[in-house]
Image 1 (cartoon, rainbow, N blue to C red):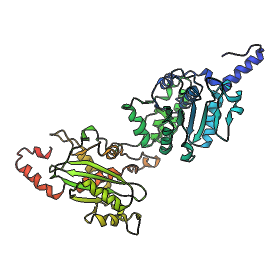
Image 2 (image 1 turned 30 degrees about the horizontal axis):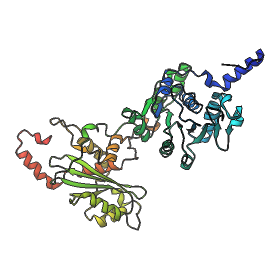
Image 3 (image 1 turned 135 degrees about the vertical axis):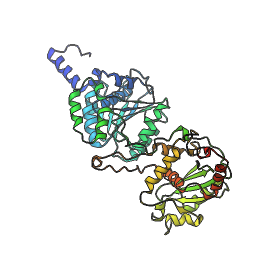
Length: 473
């Protein structure tokens, strides 16, 4: 820590005290987990860690180092100014926790425009400006909160973006778009109490296969600068076991569990042209406020279902019906199925229900099974199809990811809502009603079952199969 010459002892002590309070970046010594995060060269990084791990300070230092071009492990992100964006939950959190409790105490004034916080920070623009001297050239950090409209996140390019705590998916998508022309980086710091599915699929799980994505975690005891016993006591007072686990260990408690945990690579099959004798069943999950999901499932004569095509359609029913018929490729389906809620749902472009609109183009269409308990009964039926058979070592349900990417994704991520405090008395598990449309189509198709016409093939197989192997292959 260098000090100006000619200062009295009292002035030196006062300056040291000021810097300790207001310029903590010079004193930053990352612990092992923070250092691993800073060293990573991944373009997208996530710190999913518990309370008191040091997520916020780590995120702020990463931003500060990049904008001032002092990062010990990264080359400058720009030859000119480096532009940053820091995002957090709401305006109050941004103003107090991120600005005054973090950046105000972190950034040395010698790097700020005008040499002071007052001259460097614009309240109207919510932007902290750095010196125009080289090599910084006037870099800046803009501060946004998640309670702002999506438009605030659009438009301009940025070099480095920090999302503190979970960002709404639409705003996260805009943030990623801001990095397209700069080749910049984005990182997330959050305690994963009940993260959204996009956090799981687009960051946490994708990090296993994408070298451009890296995730970091740990236990709150990784931070050597805290009173671990006090933190442990405070966390123990949280009644919700899901939240308590996340705040202590940082482990994902994204939902109570996957509905189809067995679904995996054994259920994925490369696309092929189904046998012309197999029965085609078309299942439709329509909506009037978003796109309609459609699956094309083929039953063979051994009660095995292959989901080989899907559609995700917008527009009026006439257009959707034409697209669905085109996808059938001239083959007449054994059955047309539709979500029973379409009978009572709002209307599309007219006075008739969605069901009646589709029935105009598909007279044979019928609602899939709908009665009390049918959702869970259908889920159990699908689980039965996913189960690996004893003799063949294969399941009875296959999906082609290359032609049904959304069905594949949803089957892998379909989950239960996490338990709440009220569930301690009686836990009533409920599926998460987000991105489940294709799962509903699969469930409806499975509950419909093998078309009647195909039973004669099964009877023929059983008649010539003394050992019953046909039951399992």
